[in-house]
Amino acid sequence: RRARAVALVKTLSPRQRQILERIAAGHRSKQIAWQLSLSEKTVKMHRALLFAKLDTTNVADVIRIAVEAGL
Image (cartoon, rainbow, N blue to C red; front, side, top):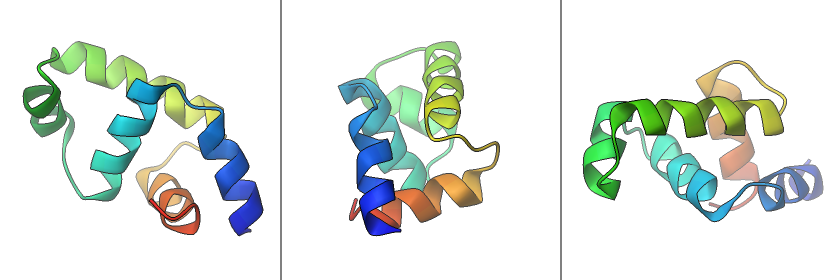
């Protein structure tokens, strides 16, 4: 599982990885937007793309993948 998670995370862009790390830390889109000086709409777009790349539709799976990848 760890190898699969690491491979999935490697497919993400640097910005998507930043957002994944913050989602895994429990931050909401609005908080992430403020931290990264982005609009909330931009964060939501990156979230949607990373959810698609990680082949999941829920935050719990995204967090599980981040933990398994060692983020």
